[in-house]
Length: 380
Image (cartoon, rainbow, N blue to C red; front, side):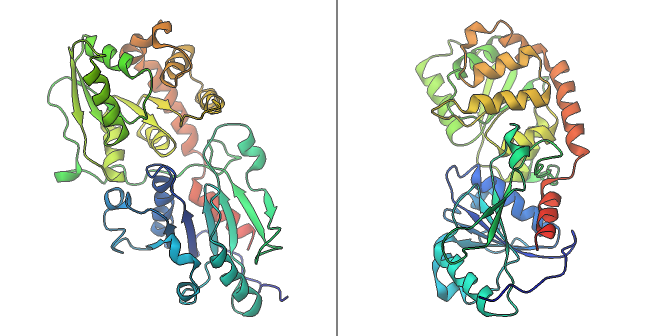
């Protein structure tokens, strides 16, 4: 078996070819994060092949991507990666990324492993397992660790774990470089001319949703609730149809269409309070710098409780903010939280300062693409 040829060290500005694989579980989360990564690498001059098993969300999330009109990113069907007739037309990438631990198609690995072993000019790609975002302690312990490939055509190769996170010892976060791009015309979210508080709602189906809507409806200040397309819209309509909110009061509900990523980022920046869910919108809420309440992806064994607590610890959230997050994530009843209404209405000053401090801490660190490039450079 021949050894892969040596390559010169990679510099942060040296263009590379990346294969990024996305197996869709939640098409707003998996696709959202991996598209942002692909676009961020392309913006730095790299070439990306994004292999995905369900690219439908990109039609509105990243208009033009499916038609091949996004410079530096090529969207390919996951199923094509298993065909030798397709792989034989492609150059071997410098980097392979398994998005959130998905296994690469065996035919794809076998084809390029054979080329590495038999062709002198083809070098072994750096193989990275990109994991989920968390503030838990295991992130720093496991980030960057090697894992040997024990079977298959690439036996003897090495994968590297890459954990996004909030600290210098983690993989960092993808920065929002386009939050201000969606301005004017159809790309903007029209602001109310009245002194109305704007609240965005992007959620799953929290048990506390009726309590949130009731609180907003009965506060003295009018609220315009901007509800994201999809599950959030279905959840709100269900609550209102059941009559769980007795009277709309000062609450105005607006159901939004699907938004591109720049439009969604602009929405978060325009609101006074953002109710966000999952991974991508949490990060964008942090960059928006506005008060937010986060709903972690619900897990049947309540493993998301530890994930939530770790984030709140890193944010240095006070007891009131922690209580509201516990209620929003189903770990207690909203009626048991004495400060539920107060947090939504009047606690923004302190919570906003805490989030500003957290955002500044993040800005002092390298972003995720920079740390990813460093890992690649060290292992080529």
